[in-house]
Image (cartoon, rainbow, N blue to C red; front, side):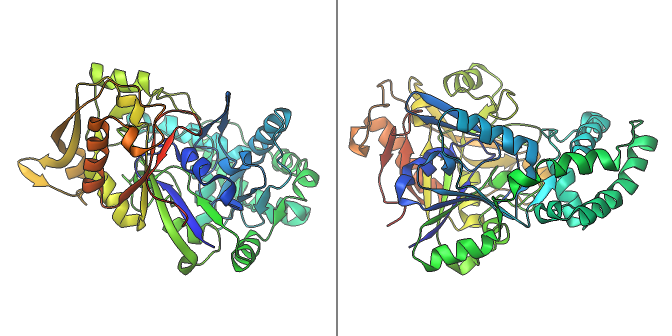
Length: 428
């Protein structure tokens, strides 16, 4: 049975939960392999809406084992807040596993994130202020705290002392903030130990054994391709690898075990935070997409920047990730538009680029070259077969497929879990 990687093809918020829902009870494990509580999934179950930030969206599927793997940075307070909220709504969260090698976000990571972002002024990156970047920086600097460290108080205290030796100088002398006490951090982390103990495990071993036993494992990426720290619009990116390669390093499952790479892409484009965005709209069309698509961040509540579909970005995502299938979401949001532009290439100072420019300066100055497609006015939220879509909607989807480098295997036509048109099986 397969190991499936599910990632975002744009700048996040593409609706990855829709694809997870589509796979449903055919999946045995859902693994979050990167990021932290700096991204969110909004999942609609019947008339209930769930906003998840740190937990894998598969936690809402009965029978699925949700896993927070080693590539994730974990804010333990947020973790238990989300678990308690789900439990209060009748969701079984008892199967959750967390990697012993996952790094922990502490109070000093959150403080540093907020003060350094403010310090940047006009050069702000647009972080969520939740400590994600500083936690990953400590991981790379080899001064991070891992889940397993919480179970040995002596090791935990030594690591916190080592981290704060430098950070308190920075807080006091550069940012004019108070120093953070070692005991304050250690006591806070130790307060969670007994609740964490049954969840923390060797998740790499667990996942490999599951695959050996013929189980289906879904690896769910946070953020998206254009926010990947190596392959995104650096420095306006997240601090982890949100592309398919991150699924291997972030989980301890070898690349040759992955069978499918599913990329989720909106029928238009959105972005939260700073950074280049060639198809961004500043007119009534942008407001229409924001309003009709309810484009506000699940985690931040910030209005998302909106723009038309960008085919070069989709092709880039297909190439970088080895995409086997696209899931096109929010096609219903475009209902009512007379004409729908799609960026097919860029113009950079008179030179045509059919692919995403490798030079960020070129990408920042890229002007989209559009091709327009006829819109439709019919309500498509009830469609469950491709043939049930209006001809113009079918033509639009097929045009995107031709431009994007991989087949479109499913199409989201509404916010409900079942509001989807399946063209090709995502597992078989």
